[in-house]
Image 1 (cartoon, rainbow, N blue to C red):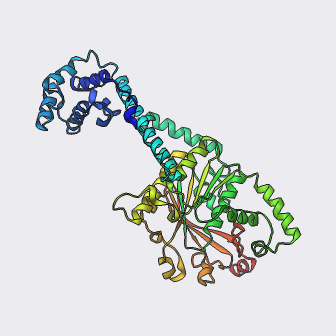
Image 2: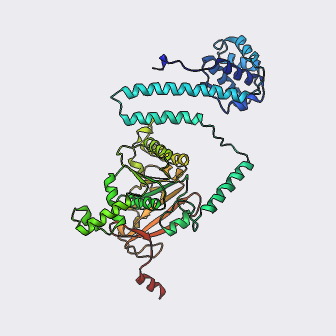
Image 3: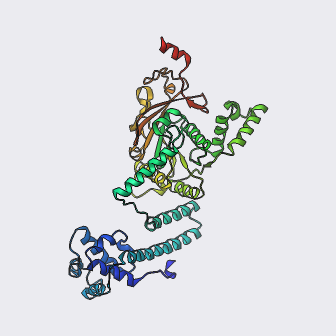
Amino acid sequence: MEKNIALPFDCDTEEVVLGAAMLEVKAMPEVVQYLRPEMFYYDNHRIIFAALMRMYNERRNIDLITVADELRRHNELEKVGGPFYITKLCSQVASTAHLRTHCLIVKDFYLRRQVIKGLSHLLGTAQDMSVDLADVVCDIQELATQVEKDAVKADNVRNMEVLMDDTLTQAKERMENSANGVTGTDTGLADLNKITGGWQNGDLVIIAARPATGKTMFTLFLARIAARTGVNAVFFSIEMQGERLGDRLILMESNVNPYRWRTGQTDEAEWNEAYTTAESLAELPIIIDDNPSMSMDYIRAQARMLKSRGKCDIIFIDYLQLSDMKGTVKENRNREQEVAAAARKAKLLAKEMNCPVILLSQLNREAENRFGGKPQLSDLRESGAIEQDADIVVMLYRPALYNIPTDKDSGYPTEGLGVLNIAKHRNGETGNVYFSHNNSMTKFEDYVPPMEWLMKQAK
């Protein structure tokens, strides 16, 4: 469809850039920061710049003679217009003083062409009723991402003076924002805050557990705590319907009997309490997305939209292995590679959004075959690469599920005991954090050993 649309280009500027690259020794190091061969509109200009890139990468001398020889050796000299055209390019250059500006002009025209081509393709896709609308939205996001990568002029190369200034600025911000050592988002558990300092911006946190351990309930607890402190929480629930999450939030906040609530036998007093609790929860800055077929690309698109509205400060994803992998599938890619790619996208999402991403993951059956059922990093299901991308890996473990009366590490009785094993912490210490929970996994708090146990230890 883009054949009917005039694509923008600037032949003169392309010629000036190529000529400068052949005439000025210091030109290529600057040009390669901004341009790639495909960014040139004309085929012969792309061929010439590709030759310049080969010579530059191989540290060979670049001038009119050597470039012509390089093109000749690859049977490309006549394709670009012969020695005469190479000479013409060099004659176009009066000065290299504005080389950076000229490079940015070539790049700008390239990006505009990409946008035109991409939008033209999307228009045709949107009109094709056989294409799922969700796929169209993902294609729109992908186009925006591709263009953004080249369009954003963020400078990630800093000398030590700039880096030290930026480092001290961040350290000062931590000091100003610290509340009893918590510099990030409150986790709701004192010992977990002590180890992590709260959930930190840009970190990918993996919470891994076997099925039916309570990882969704625990993650809802984390989201609720974050929201109670004014943090905008976004919860992507792939496994569970939003209303079921709503049930659990009401049960967390109230004293309604979980069994009677779930079986529709709630009495009037409990209903009134549930109604009041729901009104209170309605004021919390939590957004639930329960699209059953969401992919990491979909999650990123939604998160970016909410971030632009100031409604995304922390992201929860329940859970990794259920996310739609079609956005990451490539030829000959197996399931493990797909999961690894999705985990990598989650880490990039944390960096891009500059917020914590809490990603739930299943553990494989190896933990259950091990005496005591205590999980290890090697139990992360389907991908060891998940561990590599994560800044923090938390193993959620309930020893009572394996009929273990006493926790081996702490000696605590296991009834109502939950264990968070911080198995990996890129920027801090590891270790166990203990919490208490009720039978329905609707209440969580810092663990305090029972009085009987304390008295026995005192003897």
